[in-house]
Length: 149
Image: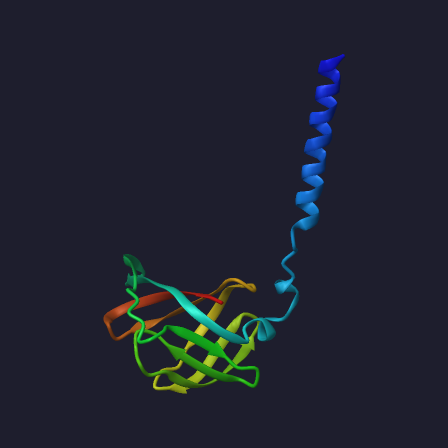
């Protein structure tokens, strides 16, 4: 008789724990908003990874070292203002726009950016650009950037 009572108590306890854990979890509704609204704000640059291709052949993968002066960030204003700073004490400042779903183009000085959005939630914003880079003559560079709040 005692074994049956213990099993029922254990089952009830597990059920209660499962119900409590499920009801306390907050759903992430950030993907319910359009990218234009989700992107607005100041994001810290968490990581920049380069994948380098020469004549279509992958040759190198590297993560850029961060030396913030004083911080690395990207900021998207609600009226199209844009600011980007990485390993510099000066920012690239200008404007941005979403040209198509998942595509951001900036018009900033001295550098412009053309990104494809990979992930965009309240806690993670990842983009990629694919273009030649003067630091790697003759190569195509895929630049993956990870931003966090």
